[in-house]
Image (cartoon, rainbow, N blue to C red; front, side, top):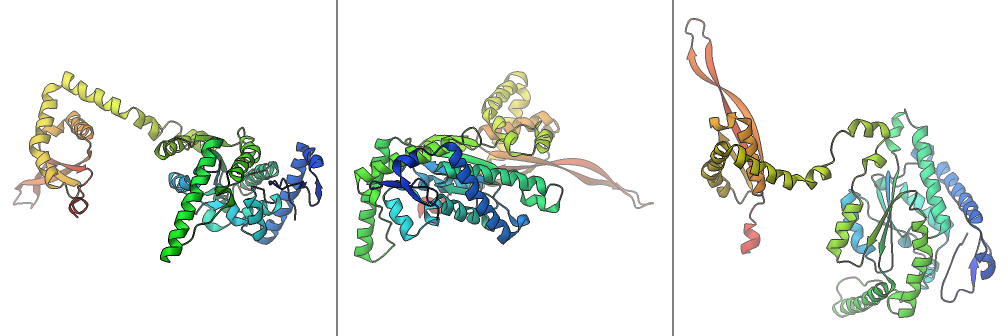
Length: 419
Protein backbone atom coordinates (compact mmCIF):
# COMPACT_ATOMS: atom_id res chain seq x y z
CA UNK A 1 0.00 0.00 0.00
CA UNK A 2 1.27 3.44 -0.89
CA UNK A 3 2.54 5.56 1.99
CA UNK A 4 3.55 9.19 1.64
CA UNK A 5 4.87 11.83 4.02
CA UNK A 6 4.75 9.80 7.25
CA UNK A 7 6.29 11.68 10.16
CA UNK A 8 6.85 11.05 13.87
CA UNK A 9 9.25 11.65 16.70
CA UNK A 10 11.08 8.42 15.93
CA UNK A 11 10.84 8.56 12.13
CA UNK A 12 14.27 7.86 10.67
CA UNK A 13 12.94 7.48 7.15
CA UNK A 14 9.95 8.43 5.02
CA UNK A 15 8.08 6.07 2.81
CA UNK A 16 7.72 7.07 -0.80
CA UNK A 17 5.82 5.48 -3.67
CA UNK A 18 5.54 2.04 -2.14
CA UNK A 19 9.17 1.67 -0.97
CA UNK A 20 11.21 3.03 1.91
CA UNK A 21 13.75 5.69 0.92
CA UNK A 22 16.25 7.71 2.96
CA UNK A 23 14.93 10.92 4.49
CA UNK A 24 17.27 13.11 2.44
CA UNK A 25 16.24 11.51 -0.83
CA UNK A 26 12.57 11.85 0.00
CA UNK A 27 13.07 15.56 0.68
CA UNK A 28 14.25 16.05 -2.90
CA UNK A 29 10.88 14.99 -4.37
CA UNK A 30 9.74 17.73 -6.71
CA UNK A 31 6.19 19.12 -6.99
CA UNK A 32 5.99 17.58 -10.47
CA UNK A 33 6.58 14.11 -9.01
CA UNK A 34 3.95 14.69 -6.34
CA UNK A 35 1.44 15.75 -8.99
CA UNK A 36 2.20 12.62 -11.02
CA UNK A 37 1.81 10.47 -7.91
CA UNK A 38 -1.57 12.08 -7.29
CA UNK A 39 -2.66 11.51 -10.89
CA UNK A 40 -1.73 7.83 -10.70
CA UNK A 41 -3.43 7.35 -7.34
CA UNK A 42 -6.59 9.20 -8.34
CA UNK A 43 -6.87 7.49 -11.74
CA UNK A 44 -6.62 4.05 -10.15
CA UNK A 45 -9.24 4.87 -7.53
CA UNK A 46 -11.56 6.45 -10.09
CA UNK A 47 -11.39 3.37 -12.34
CA UNK A 48 -12.27 1.15 -9.40
CA UNK A 49 -15.28 3.27 -8.46
CA UNK A 50 -16.54 3.59 -12.03
CA UNK A 51 -16.31 -0.18 -12.43
CA UNK A 52 -18.25 -0.75 -9.24
CA UNK A 53 -20.91 1.98 -9.41
CA UNK A 54 -21.17 2.87 -13.10
CA UNK A 55 -20.54 6.39 -14.40
CA UNK A 56 -24.14 7.56 -14.01
CA UNK A 57 -23.98 6.67 -10.30
CA UNK A 58 -20.83 8.68 -9.58
CA UNK A 59 -22.91 11.17 -7.63
CA UNK A 60 -20.85 13.24 -5.24
CA UNK A 61 -22.11 15.93 -2.82
CA UNK A 62 -22.83 19.26 -4.45
CA UNK A 63 -21.15 21.09 -1.56
CA UNK A 64 -18.01 20.03 0.28
CA UNK A 65 -16.79 21.93 3.31
CA UNK A 66 -13.21 20.95 4.09
CA UNK A 67 -12.69 21.79 7.74
CA UNK A 68 -9.12 22.02 8.96
CA UNK A 69 -7.72 23.41 12.14
CA UNK A 70 -4.91 23.41 14.60
CA UNK A 71 -5.16 20.83 17.39
CA UNK A 72 -7.54 22.26 19.98
CA UNK A 73 -8.97 24.85 17.57
CA UNK A 74 -12.52 23.58 18.09
CA UNK A 75 -13.30 21.58 14.97
CA UNK A 76 -15.47 19.17 16.94
CA UNK A 77 -17.18 22.01 18.79
CA UNK A 78 -18.05 23.88 15.59
CA UNK A 79 -18.81 21.00 13.21
CA UNK A 80 -22.47 20.73 14.23
CA UNK A 81 -22.86 24.50 14.02
CA UNK A 82 -21.45 24.58 10.47
CA UNK A 83 -23.72 21.72 9.40
CA UNK A 84 -26.74 23.62 10.70
CA UNK A 85 -25.72 26.84 8.94
CA UNK A 86 -25.35 25.02 5.59
CA UNK A 87 -28.29 22.60 6.09
CA UNK A 88 -26.04 19.53 5.83
CA UNK A 89 -27.93 16.48 7.13
CA UNK A 90 -25.17 13.87 7.16
CA UNK A 91 -22.83 13.63 10.17
CA UNK A 92 -19.33 15.07 9.68
CA UNK A 93 -16.86 12.79 7.93
CA UNK A 94 -13.87 12.61 10.24
CA UNK A 95 -11.08 11.18 8.13
CA UNK A 96 -9.14 9.90 11.13
CA UNK A 97 -12.16 7.79 12.10
CA UNK A 98 -12.43 6.36 8.59
CA UNK A 99 -8.91 5.02 9.02
CA UNK A 100 -9.37 3.53 12.47
CA UNK A 101 -7.05 0.56 12.13
CA UNK A 102 -4.44 -0.48 14.72
CA UNK A 103 -1.65 0.62 12.38
CA UNK A 104 -3.31 3.96 11.70
CA UNK A 105 -3.91 4.57 15.41
CA UNK A 106 -0.23 4.00 16.16
CA UNK A 107 0.82 6.46 13.46
CA UNK A 108 -1.64 9.09 14.64
CA UNK A 109 -0.49 8.72 18.24
CA UNK A 110 2.98 9.78 17.11
CA UNK A 111 1.54 12.75 15.20
CA UNK A 112 2.24 11.07 11.85
CA UNK A 113 0.34 10.86 8.57
CA UNK A 114 -1.62 7.98 6.95
CA UNK A 115 -1.18 6.82 3.35
CA UNK A 116 -2.67 9.00 0.61
CA UNK A 117 -3.93 6.02 -1.40
CA UNK A 118 -5.88 4.72 1.58
CA UNK A 119 -7.21 8.13 2.58
CA UNK A 120 -8.42 9.13 -0.89
CA UNK A 121 -9.92 5.74 -1.72
CA UNK A 122 -11.95 5.37 1.46
CA UNK A 123 -13.02 9.01 1.38
CA UNK A 124 -14.33 8.98 -2.20
CA UNK A 125 -16.28 5.84 -1.49
CA UNK A 126 -17.79 7.50 1.60
CA UNK A 127 -18.78 10.57 -0.43
CA UNK A 128 -20.79 8.41 -2.83
CA UNK A 129 -23.16 7.32 -0.06
CA UNK A 130 -26.72 8.63 -0.66
CA UNK A 131 -26.88 10.47 2.69
CA UNK A 132 -23.98 12.70 1.59
CA UNK A 133 -25.63 14.05 -1.55
CA UNK A 134 -27.00 17.27 -0.04
CA UNK A 135 -23.58 18.25 1.25
CA UNK A 136 -20.68 16.91 3.27
CA UNK A 137 -18.43 18.30 5.99
CA UNK A 138 -14.91 16.80 5.92
CA UNK A 139 -12.77 17.02 9.02
CA UNK A 140 -9.08 16.40 8.36
CA UNK A 141 -8.76 16.46 4.55
CA UNK A 142 -6.59 17.28 2.69
CA UNK A 143 -3.39 16.93 4.69
CA UNK A 144 -0.71 16.38 2.04
CA UNK A 145 0.17 17.79 -1.36
CA UNK A 146 -0.89 14.54 -3.02
CA UNK A 147 -4.31 14.79 -1.34
CA UNK A 148 -4.55 18.40 -2.50
CA UNK A 149 -3.98 17.34 -6.09
CA UNK A 150 -6.51 14.52 -5.75
CA UNK A 151 -9.07 17.04 -4.50
CA UNK A 152 -8.48 19.19 -7.60
CA UNK A 153 -8.89 16.11 -9.80
CA UNK A 154 -12.18 15.27 -8.04
CA UNK A 155 -13.48 18.77 -8.74
CA UNK A 156 -12.50 18.44 -12.42
CA UNK A 157 -14.24 15.07 -12.70
CA UNK A 158 -17.40 16.48 -11.11
CA UNK A 159 -17.42 19.28 -13.69
CA UNK A 160 -16.90 16.73 -16.47
CA UNK A 161 -19.79 14.61 -15.20
CA UNK A 162 -22.05 17.67 -15.10
CA UNK A 163 -21.21 18.49 -18.72
CA UNK A 164 -21.63 14.88 -19.81
CA UNK A 165 -25.13 14.57 -18.38
CA UNK A 166 -26.25 18.10 -19.29
CA UNK A 167 -29.51 17.95 -21.21
CA UNK A 168 -30.48 14.55 -19.75
CA UNK A 169 -32.78 13.74 -16.81
CA UNK A 170 -29.68 12.60 -14.90
CA UNK A 171 -28.31 16.15 -14.74
CA UNK A 172 -30.27 16.77 -11.52
CA UNK A 173 -27.76 14.50 -9.77
CA UNK A 174 -24.73 16.41 -11.05
CA UNK A 175 -24.94 19.92 -9.65
CA UNK A 176 -22.31 22.62 -10.02
CA UNK A 177 -19.79 21.61 -7.32
CA UNK A 178 -18.96 24.03 -4.51
CA UNK A 179 -15.87 23.46 -2.38
CA UNK A 180 -15.21 25.48 0.78
CA UNK A 181 -11.86 25.46 2.57
CA UNK A 182 -12.27 26.49 6.21
CA UNK A 183 -9.35 26.83 8.62
CA UNK A 184 -9.86 27.30 12.37
CA UNK A 185 -6.62 28.75 13.68
CA UNK A 186 -5.06 29.13 17.12
CA UNK A 187 -1.41 29.80 17.92
CA UNK A 188 0.93 27.15 19.30
CA UNK A 189 0.69 28.17 22.96
CA UNK A 190 -3.12 28.09 22.88
CA UNK A 191 -3.15 24.79 20.99
CA UNK A 192 -0.85 23.06 23.47
CA UNK A 193 -2.80 24.44 26.43
CA UNK A 194 -6.11 23.20 25.00
CA UNK A 195 -4.71 19.75 24.21
CA UNK A 196 -3.39 19.29 27.74
CA UNK A 197 -6.65 20.64 29.21
CA UNK A 198 -8.55 18.05 27.20
CA UNK A 199 -6.25 15.38 28.62
CA UNK A 200 -7.12 16.42 32.16
CA UNK A 201 -10.83 16.43 31.33
CA UNK A 202 -10.60 12.96 29.77
CA UNK A 203 -8.87 11.55 32.84
CA UNK A 204 -11.49 13.06 35.18
CA UNK A 205 -14.34 11.78 33.00
CA UNK A 206 -12.96 8.25 32.69
CA UNK A 207 -12.30 8.05 36.43
CA UNK A 208 -15.93 8.99 37.08
CA UNK A 209 -17.13 6.38 34.56
CA UNK A 210 -15.00 3.75 36.31
CA UNK A 211 -16.27 4.81 39.74
CA UNK A 212 -19.97 5.02 38.86
CA UNK A 213 -20.17 2.38 36.17
CA UNK A 214 -22.23 4.80 34.09
CA UNK A 215 -21.40 6.45 30.78
CA UNK A 216 -18.79 5.69 28.14
CA UNK A 217 -15.07 6.22 28.37
CA UNK A 218 -13.54 8.95 26.22
CA UNK A 219 -10.59 8.32 23.95
CA UNK A 220 -7.22 8.96 25.60
CA UNK A 221 -4.74 10.39 23.09
CA UNK A 222 -1.05 10.38 23.86
CA UNK A 223 -0.72 13.94 22.57
CA UNK A 224 -3.14 15.15 25.26
CA UNK A 225 -0.80 14.08 28.05
CA UNK A 226 2.63 15.14 26.79
CA UNK A 227 3.61 18.73 26.08
CA UNK A 228 6.28 17.49 23.67
CA UNK A 229 3.84 15.36 21.68
CA UNK A 230 1.27 18.18 21.73
CA UNK A 231 3.84 20.56 20.27
CA UNK A 232 4.81 17.97 17.68
CA UNK A 233 1.16 17.55 16.68
CA UNK A 234 0.88 21.32 16.22
CA UNK A 235 4.11 21.34 14.17
CA UNK A 236 2.75 18.64 11.86
CA UNK A 237 -0.41 20.70 11.39
CA UNK A 238 1.56 23.84 10.46
CA UNK A 239 4.01 22.06 8.15
CA UNK A 240 1.57 19.72 6.43
CA UNK A 241 -2.16 20.37 6.87
CA UNK A 242 -2.04 24.16 7.01
CA UNK A 243 0.17 24.48 3.94
CA UNK A 244 -2.00 21.99 2.05
CA UNK A 245 -5.17 23.97 2.78
CA UNK A 246 -3.63 27.35 1.98
CA UNK A 247 -2.49 26.03 -1.41
CA UNK A 248 -6.19 25.79 -2.39
CA UNK A 249 -6.89 29.41 -1.52
CA UNK A 250 -6.84 30.61 -5.13
CA UNK A 251 -9.08 27.79 -6.40
CA UNK A 252 -11.93 27.31 -3.93
CA UNK A 253 -13.80 29.43 -1.39
CA UNK A 254 -11.32 30.00 1.44
CA UNK A 255 -12.29 30.95 4.99
CA UNK A 256 -9.73 31.70 7.71
CA UNK A 257 -11.32 31.81 11.18
CA UNK A 258 -9.57 33.10 14.30
CA UNK A 259 -10.57 30.34 16.74
CA UNK A 260 -8.94 31.90 19.81
CA UNK A 261 -11.96 34.17 20.28
CA UNK A 262 -14.95 33.11 22.46
CA UNK A 263 -17.22 30.53 20.82
CA UNK A 264 -20.11 32.97 20.04
CA UNK A 265 -17.67 35.29 18.26
CA UNK A 266 -16.09 32.39 16.35
CA UNK A 267 -19.50 31.16 15.22
CA UNK A 268 -20.57 34.66 14.19
CA UNK A 269 -17.45 34.81 12.02
CA UNK A 270 -18.31 31.43 10.51
CA UNK A 271 -21.78 32.67 9.56
CA UNK A 272 -20.34 35.75 7.87
CA UNK A 273 -17.78 33.66 6.01
CA UNK A 274 -20.38 31.21 4.74
CA UNK A 275 -22.90 33.75 3.52
CA UNK A 276 -24.66 32.82 0.32
CA UNK A 277 -22.57 33.62 -2.78
CA UNK A 278 -24.88 33.63 -5.79
CA UNK A 279 -22.28 34.56 -8.37
CA UNK A 280 -20.21 31.46 -7.61
CA UNK A 281 -22.84 28.89 -6.61
CA UNK A 282 -25.53 29.28 -9.27
CA UNK A 283 -25.41 28.36 -12.92
CA UNK A 284 -24.57 31.61 -14.84
CA UNK A 285 -27.94 31.55 -16.63
CA UNK A 286 -29.83 31.17 -13.37
CA UNK A 287 -27.83 33.92 -11.72
CA UNK A 288 -28.49 36.28 -14.65
CA UNK A 289 -32.22 35.79 -14.20
CA UNK A 290 -32.12 36.39 -10.43
CA UNK A 291 -29.51 39.12 -10.11
CA UNK A 292 -32.07 41.94 -10.11
CA UNK A 293 -33.51 40.67 -6.81
CA UNK A 294 -31.75 41.94 -3.65
CA UNK A 295 -30.22 39.53 -1.16
CA UNK A 296 -31.98 39.26 2.19
CA UNK A 297 -28.73 40.26 3.90
CA UNK A 298 -28.65 43.51 1.91
CA UNK A 299 -32.22 44.36 2.95
CA UNK A 300 -31.76 43.43 6.60
CA UNK A 301 -28.53 45.40 6.91
CA UNK A 302 -30.37 48.72 6.56
CA UNK A 303 -33.84 47.68 7.71
CA UNK A 304 -33.69 49.32 11.13
CA UNK A 305 -32.40 52.63 9.79
CA UNK A 306 -35.09 52.63 7.09
CA UNK A 307 -37.81 51.89 9.64
CA UNK A 308 -36.73 54.76 11.90
CA UNK A 309 -36.61 57.10 8.94
CA UNK A 310 -40.14 56.14 7.86
CA UNK A 311 -41.60 56.57 11.37
CA UNK A 312 -40.01 59.98 11.79
CA UNK A 313 -41.37 60.91 8.35
CA UNK A 314 -44.91 59.95 9.37
CA UNK A 315 -44.70 62.21 12.42
CA UNK A 316 -43.42 65.17 10.42
CA UNK A 317 -45.39 64.84 7.17
CA UNK A 318 -48.69 63.16 8.19
CA UNK A 319 -49.07 63.70 11.95
CA UNK A 320 -52.88 63.51 11.97
CA UNK A 321 -53.11 60.13 10.23
CA UNK A 322 -50.15 58.83 12.21
CA UNK A 323 -51.78 59.88 15.47
CA UNK A 324 -55.03 58.13 14.57
CA UNK A 325 -53.14 54.91 13.72
CA UNK A 326 -51.25 54.92 17.02
CA UNK A 327 -54.48 55.66 18.90
CA UNK A 328 -56.21 52.73 17.14
CA UNK A 329 -53.36 50.37 18.02
CA UNK A 330 -53.27 51.49 21.63
CA UNK A 331 -57.01 51.49 22.23
CA UNK A 332 -58.37 48.72 19.98
CA UNK A 333 -55.55 46.29 19.28
CA UNK A 334 -53.20 46.15 22.27
CA UNK A 335 -55.86 44.92 24.76
CA UNK A 336 -56.46 41.94 22.44
CA UNK A 337 -52.73 41.36 21.91
CA UNK A 338 -52.13 41.31 25.66
CA UNK A 339 -54.83 38.67 26.14
CA UNK A 340 -53.02 36.44 23.64
CA UNK A 341 -49.60 36.73 25.26
CA UNK A 342 -49.46 33.00 26.00
CA UNK A 343 -49.98 31.90 22.39
CA UNK A 344 -47.98 34.72 20.82
CA UNK A 345 -50.57 35.18 18.04
CA UNK A 346 -53.43 37.67 17.93
CA UNK A 347 -55.87 37.86 14.99
CA UNK A 348 -57.89 41.09 14.89
CA UNK A 349 -60.59 42.16 12.43
CA UNK A 350 -61.56 45.76 11.79
CA UNK A 351 -63.84 47.67 9.44
CA UNK A 352 -62.43 51.07 10.41
CA UNK A 353 -62.45 53.36 7.37
CA UNK A 354 -59.08 54.72 8.50
CA UNK A 355 -57.42 51.83 6.71
CA UNK A 356 -58.96 52.64 3.36
CA UNK A 357 -55.83 54.76 3.15
CA UNK A 358 -52.93 52.40 2.22
CA UNK A 359 -50.53 54.71 4.06
CA UNK A 360 -52.37 54.05 7.32
CA UNK A 361 -51.84 50.30 6.85
CA UNK A 362 -48.13 50.88 6.23
CA UNK A 363 -47.95 53.01 9.37
CA UNK A 364 -49.61 50.30 11.46
CA UNK A 365 -47.21 47.60 10.27
CA UNK A 366 -44.19 49.85 10.87
CA UNK A 367 -45.31 50.75 14.38
CA UNK A 368 -45.71 47.10 15.34
CA UNK A 369 -42.32 46.30 13.77
CA UNK A 370 -40.64 49.02 15.80
CA UNK A 371 -42.16 47.52 18.96
CA UNK A 372 -40.86 44.03 18.12
CA UNK A 373 -44.01 42.46 16.62
CA UNK A 374 -44.47 40.84 13.20
CA UNK A 375 -47.72 42.01 11.64
CA UNK A 376 -49.50 41.15 8.39
CA UNK A 377 -52.82 42.34 7.01
CA UNK A 378 -55.30 40.66 4.69
CA UNK A 379 -58.11 42.68 3.11
CA UNK A 380 -61.36 40.75 2.60
CA UNK A 381 -64.26 42.14 0.61
CA UNK A 382 -67.63 41.06 2.00
CA UNK A 383 -71.01 41.54 0.34
CA UNK A 384 -73.69 42.85 2.77
CA UNK A 385 -77.32 42.42 1.52
CA UNK A 386 -79.16 45.76 1.44
CA UNK A 387 -82.33 44.91 -0.52
CA UNK A 388 -84.06 42.17 -2.46
CA UNK A 389 -86.11 42.52 -5.68
CA UNK A 390 -89.30 40.60 -4.98
CA UNK A 391 -90.13 40.38 -8.68
CA UNK A 392 -86.85 38.84 -9.84
CA UNK A 393 -85.53 37.45 -6.60
CA UNK A 394 -82.24 39.28 -7.08
CA UNK A 395 -80.37 40.28 -3.93
CA UNK A 396 -78.43 43.52 -4.03
CA UNK A 397 -75.38 43.82 -1.82
CA UNK A 398 -73.11 46.58 -0.69
CA UNK A 399 -69.44 45.73 -0.53
CA UNK A 400 -67.52 46.41 2.62
CA UNK A 401 -63.88 45.79 3.47
CA UNK A 402 -62.75 43.81 6.45
CA UNK A 403 -59.13 44.30 7.49
CA UNK A 404 -57.80 41.13 9.09
CA UNK A 405 -54.63 41.79 11.09
CA UNK A 406 -52.38 39.01 12.35
CA UNK A 407 -49.96 40.08 15.09
CA UNK A 408 -47.22 37.59 16.03
CA UNK A 409 -44.65 37.86 18.78
CA UNK A 410 -42.60 35.73 21.17
CA UNK A 411 -44.99 34.02 23.54
CA UNK A 412 -44.66 33.86 27.32
CA UNK A 413 -43.11 30.64 28.66
CA UNK A 414 -45.56 30.16 31.51
CA UNK A 415 -44.43 26.64 32.53
CA UNK A 416 -40.75 27.54 32.30
CA UNK A 417 -41.18 30.57 34.54
CA UNK A 418 -43.11 28.88 37.34
CA UNK A 419 -42.11 25.22 37.12
